[in-house]
Length: 259
Image 1 (cartoon, rainbow, N blue to C red):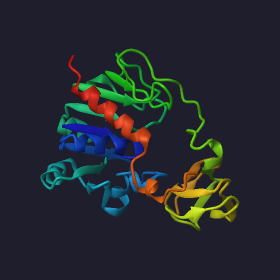
Image 2 (cartoon, rainbow, N blue to C red):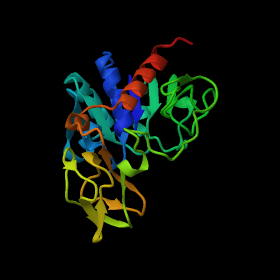
Image 3 (tube, helix red, strand yellow):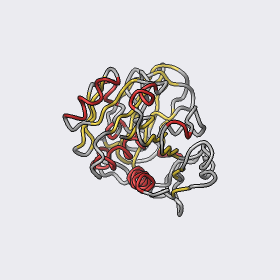
């Protein structure tokens, strides 16, 4: 049994990979109003819509720990609103994966399960968690760390076709987000994608709108609200990224390691 804290893009990549490797007893814990940019590949959307399918794998929202097994009986991944992770104590999973990617430890400890795995910076392998998975793009992406930390957060978005910061859409101010475009839409440089409190948000490069937060979601200034993929392939909007797929494979490795 595997419990995953966070059902965003990376947590979904982990859950999907484990499900495809025939780990079918998976439950994911989320906040009451989870935020995701790459919503089409994030199981946390089940909190809002009741269910979410990513690459043929379906996650369903359950309302209490007692309902988790019902989802498993139907071949689904269970998503539970449980910001305090109380389901861990009730379900007693063999493995817990912290996939929140908060860049700091929000309370995960080695006491959570027999095997506790943290994604990215903020954890010390061998002390706070048993293993850490490197999430920084580059030579060490996906490395399973058994002692020490992952690389520090660079704050620089991953490079796609030579674009880093320009491919990311950010909120110009605090307020409610209103969308003018949808995930999967082609956009050109200068085109309005949405508004926050009357202030427009424009694409800075040509491409496809790969990710966008839910309309009506509150933002703060500088918050990431969207992602333009300069490769222009609309199929990428609905499939797991190379990074999430690699990290999912590394978690699978970490679970199967002995010792």
